[in-house]
Image 1 (cartoon, one colour):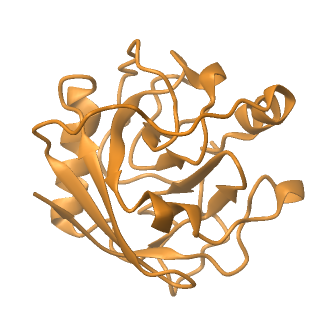
Image 2: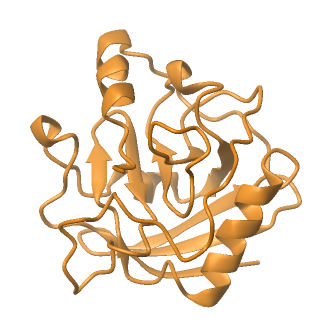
Length: 192
């Protein structure tokens, strides 16, 4: 199953929804820090929200602590929409990444944990297939607001530092749903 956001990308293009910031305050964490490498370098700090999506946050934290996100590419990046990464099965830099976006991890898929939070700039959501209960390891970071995702994808956190780094991540080809030729990647992921 492809864990892509094709339908949502098309819907976003149709609505043209925009916003300036997530407007979500920093919480007690935990914080996921992504060291980004490639055409851009720097740290992106994501405040994870265990009160909103406890099972998803637990899985992300476990994968980060295992080093599973290290060297994983941003395989799908759509200008004005989102940057997607986290395919620990097929998205490792240096390997065959042609299947990046269809894999997950050895951990089980998760049941949806939808909330009343809105997908605004800097919000981090879990990627999934058409089945709402299929999120596993992949996540995406919003460049701009996309309210049509509200209640459809699980929100796991929001960027509290480094949104300017996210903005510079190599964009993909819109005709190929944001597939990136020379993708940027997560050098190392840590949890504090």
